[in-house]
Length: 181
Length: 123
Image 1 (cartoon, one colour):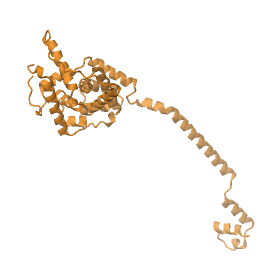
Image 2 (cartoon, rainbow over the protein chains, first blue to last red):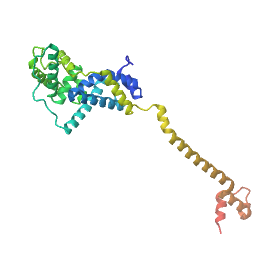
Image 3 (cartoon, rainbow over the protein chains, first blue to last red):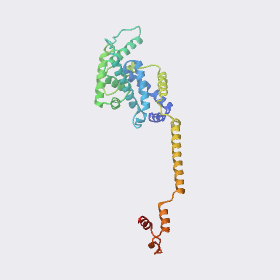
Image 4 (cartoon, rainbow over the protein chains, first blue to last red):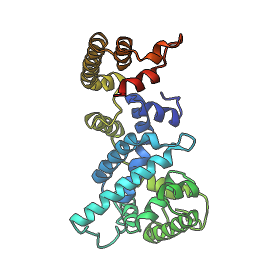
């Protein structure tokens, strides 16, 4: 299974092969969870959305075009699942927005400092519009091209470039306190 | 962190690494197991062929029985009709033999069915 291509695994999963679906989950769980967390912020919600995305992908795997890469197809489903969950959450309750971004608070050691940096980065990310969050994560973390991200988000390539640019600029501003990191 | 221009069309490795750490979630094997269990529980997999066949077995047998019953009734009716019923042509020909008009016997050639039919309707 580990040597098989995504398209082969998808075909097997469509035929009911649980091991093949398990291999796809193993391959894409980390990136799918990161993208869902970028959308939702909350780790528990992100995991629920990622699970919904995987199950939806399994149900509709027959619609996957094996001539195209599997990752963007899957991440589009996961992103949609996360966005749906975000909308439902917004309807349920107004989200508590942190009053300020985490400031640099020199901790007892470098590890604590890095933890604070991560928190600041997540808060900076949360302050971005949803599509900018997904675009910058897919581009700078997951390594997808602008064209692939355009496919995931269903928007033009030029808009993706714009989203990545604005997201980076906002994150740079949010991390001003860590400029010497 | 070394911030290159936000215009840079290449992925930013340092920002990417930081984001990856910040968004990382532990327990990947546990999460994968959870997804697989949910897929199993919700029957998200396509059913194997034997289950599909099994689901169709009962209605399939019922449909076959209905077809068999229909065919039996039809065959029974058809065979009894063959024995009991005579066709109109046979009746007319027999009648014509009994009361044959003279023009039937005036020729060596047997009359056609149309002629027999026309004569039988004559008063």
